[in-house]
Image (cartoon, rainbow, N blue to C red; front, side, top):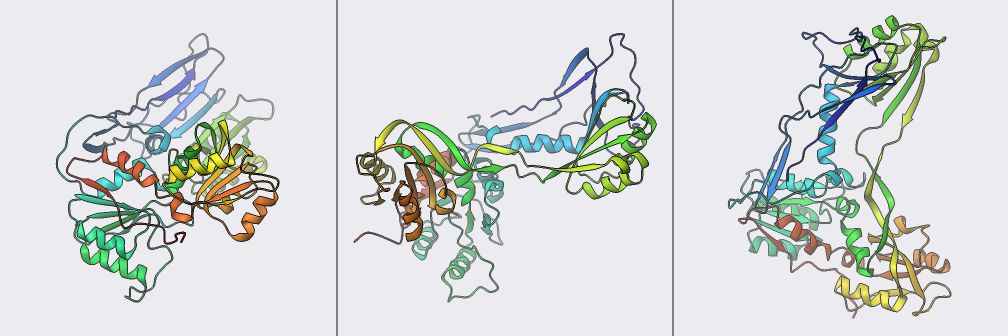
Amino acid sequence: MVCHIKVAATFSRPPDHTPISPSVIPTPGHAKPPLMLTGWRPLSWTLSLLTSRRLLICKSLNLNTALFSSASSIVPCLFSPTQSFSFLTSRQTSGLLRSSVNSPSNCCFSVSAHRTVPMELKEVLQVLEQLAPLSLAESWDNVGLLVEPSKSRPIKTIMLTNDLTDAVMEEAEALSCDLIISYHPPLFRPIKRLVQKDWKQRLAIRAVEAGVAVFSPHTSWDSMKGGVNDWLVGGLGSGQVSVLSQALSSASHSHKLEFMVRSAEELHTVVEELKACDDGATLQCSGSRPDSSGIHVSITCSDSALPSSVQILLRHSAPSQSLSILRLEKPPLPGHGQGRLCVLEHPVTVATAVQKMKSHLGLVNLRLALGAGRTLESSVCTAAVCAGSGASVLNGVKADLFITGEMSHHEVLDAVAKGTSVILSDHSNSERGFLAVFRERLTVRLPDAVTVALSKADRDPLEVV
């Protein structure tokens, strides 16, 4: 894949092309990063800047390399205090480029080359991050690299499993695996010791002794677009799918500071002070045309920049008297989040839905609770799903059918009383089938020298007898 990122700077000149004052443009020897400034007037002209020198992500059927180059400092654009304007630090420009590359919806891959040598662990982790950013995981989860060998070795064999058990570890050792990707994290709660009597700690010790790395994606796979929950709801057929619990950007919260200044000189002074105290945090500033009360100014800053920005504004008379602070919400990530609701393109009966899910999950048996007043022939037009233990996500959702791995007795009773039928597959059975899907996605991004295997020993601990 080749990923190009364009940054557009839009600004204006007055009709007579009168020069715009450079009063707040940093000099070439300024210690702080240059600014990207934009301004506009009624007759505008647009300049599009292609700022990345070398922003390239390429991965072939057998090659995964990521080459990122920081964008050049953006051209400083001039403005007058009588115009609307905004400024963006060059650090923020680089951050925007990085976030757009890392955003799950902005990455794609294409075949470009051939590689026949194994990969280093860090390279495989980069591929996994591209496929499912760990920032999508729930805050309570323990995801990412959980066991890292002290001696690095090329990754030749990777095993995918839903749970890391003794049987799976024996299988991995027999295959001389270098990396185990366990959907559920084998290490979840904090531990104070590593001893043999605890089965999870025992597995961690075995992995370390064998030099096997262990990685867990868990809820990042649940949340990502095209992940576990999209795969699960797909078992019922096509339809309009939406996210039940929307994922938000991983960026820190930002704040909007609004205030007044009396003159262009005061504006210049405030802006210079804000620039001088910038410690790498992002700052955006915009101002409007002056009126009888002064110049209206708005600043957007990150959590880390808020204290210093407020301190600076309070030192000035007009800003201190007019200052207001608003906390801005994190933007949503469309298509990413926990759980899915599907409005089926072709409604089915409850009985048909059961058969479809048996086939999709590869199971002989499922558990079914019919909603109040429902029968096996009742129509299912809407279905809500959540892989694993989904009651907390499905609670309060209006749908004809719930599909999840497990719910408590009382949670099922609550759903049934509201007329919603429930299909339960047992916890890991609602997740395990996605491993085969992910194996294909991962394989095409790795060299031929790397084998990706599905565990044959992995299974749900419960079975119907």
